[in-house]
Image (cartoon, rainbow, N blue to C red; front, side):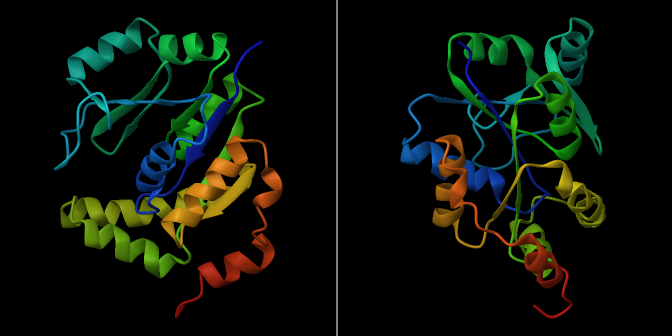
Length: 205
């Protein structure tokens, strides 16, 4: 028996990393292991190597690419990100569930390799809030912030590729929603997407 793969993706500023940290802290998914991605970007204040990301040089990252060390990898702006192939396969083979946090491109790559993966897309309650969160965290310079806002539009267009939508309006509720999906209780997901998306894009939320 093999474990299940859960893939969560979101535009920058949606708060998926914060939700995942709360989910793991709740510790109500005993079979779940979190895949720590590799990256070549510099750590942000408070980030811990091996916990938030595995921070490596570009030379080391590209060596792993050549050795087929990643299930998926992508270059986002000026930095590389990747998911360890050996770690994920080992956990799944040991009947552990695995949660992978990736961008939309990485999510599509994982779905190709794991057709039964559960695909989760997360967004804030509206686009205005998405831009506010990106601006408020102050981790990008103005040019990168502008690029991330533009990129978010394309990422949101890919939403139909995913199985479930989680709206991060409240961290605790969003963590409970993801937790519910992992525990096999998809019926908790009651977001009416037909009415949600017009409100998301409304100019004055």
